[in-house]
Length: 176
Image (cartoon, rainbow, N blue to C red):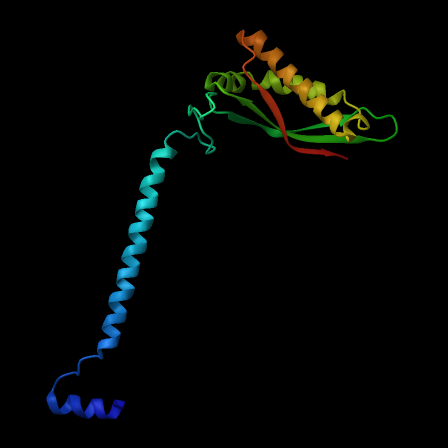
């Protein structure tokens, strides 16, 4: 029916004609889909809240024990990045390194945070003694990684009696 015919019909009967049945079925389907989506989203949120309770501020697991029997790894970024001049007789070179340390005991991470000024000082001295040509290879970077771990463990052992930190990881490594 045309819009003009509907207007005439409305004037004659004094009522608005009922909308076609197809639109009401479509509305029911849309509302049902929205409710289903909201319920699914709510269920997902609820199911993920239980696992979020055991995470630290960085979203990394804290105090959770994986199936392997080892405690979960906890990572601590050493911020800001380390920037040092390298020993190089031929040119002025520098190195910028971002590090993260890993431990499985939250106390070790807290100890590292407490003694961070001394750890950073020791690492800056270590990094400043490096030569650019040695760090150009994977073996050179891995050797520096091992030296950095030994330096951190030395500082923590002197300060707390426990080495605590198990690994050091480079998250950025730039030599220029």
